[in-house]
Every structure is written in structure tokens, then in C-alpha cells.
Length: 212
Image (cartoon, rainbow, N blue to C red; front, side):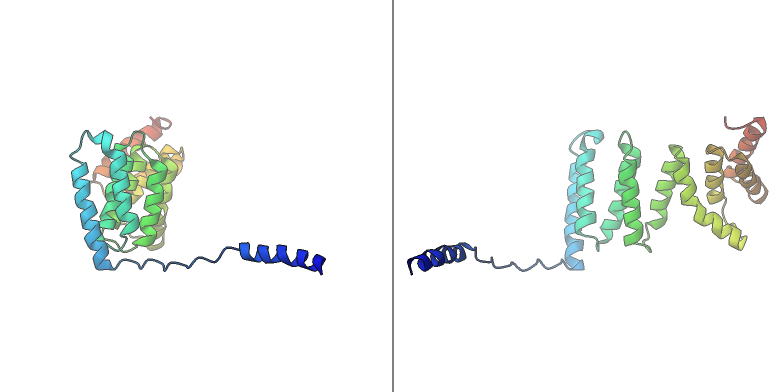
């Protein structure tokens, strides 16, 4: 009997030592669209105050954090879409060196979240100009391929811009034969355009034997 009691007591103590399950707190309710718009406007006004603090290059990290707050916390507010554009401009034009990876991640996220956004074209142009300015030819080429495929499919070219960037990327990557085809097409279809002026210069470079 004594041995049995010795066995029971440790088991009883162990059972008593098991912590009670804490009561689970209810998950916070998502903010309504109206509340998101209200808070996004407040956060946006706070950004205007940040811009008055000091030299631009010193406040860039603070601005980055503020725009990300709007983007992440208030995605249904129209100001979230504008914040994507403003932050992309900061990443690509103001940080030295540019925050390329962060910009591309933000760009992909924007495309997934807002496929029909009124900021879509401006944001795309921001990234394309960035690739072009910094001679990121592989990325520039990838960004223009869908437009070139559409042109090949339909035979309709309303603007020289996409073919120009495509040809410039090919030229930068050393695919001179493909670049020449694109430049000649631009000169033929859009002879008065600024893209045609540059295309003529590129053809001269190609005839001289390559990139200048």
C-alpha cells in the first residue's frame, strides 16, 4: 500500500503541474475601407511633415518606412497605390546606390495587387527608364518581350517606344543582328520620332563594328 501511494503522488503532482491553457484572444478585425482611407491620409500628411525635417538624403530611410506603412497597413486606400509610385521613385532615383532589389520586389507586388490601377503605366515606365538608365539590359529586355510578342502576333505597332527599348537592350547585350532589325523598323515606321534619331546613330555604330 505504501508503495502504491508513492507511485500515485508523483503522478498527481505532475498532473497538477500542467499549465492551464490560456484563453485565446479574438483576432483583430480588419479595418474597413473607409477607416483605411482615413488612416492612410493621416499617415500621408505625416510624410509631408517628414520632408520638412532636413536634407533629403538624410530622411530617405524615414520616408521609406512611412510609405511602407501605408502600403502594408492600408492596401485598400487609393493612397497606397500612389505610395508604391513614390517609393519606387525614391528607390530608383534617390538612394545611392539605387535599391534595385527592393524596387523590383515592390514592382512585382504592385502588379499582383493592382492589375487595373491608374498608376500602372507610370510605375511600369519608372522601372523601364531605370533599367535603361543603368544599362540593366537583361531586365530591360525581359520587360519589353510581351510587347514585342504582341507586335509579332498582330503586326500593329502604335508607338516606337517598346521596340526601341527592346532594340537598345539587344544592342547592349551584343545581339547586333536583332538590334539592327528593330532600329530599321523604327526608322521606317516612325521616321520623325526621337527614337528614329537614336536608331540612326545605333545603325552607324553597328556598321562600324559594334557598340560605342
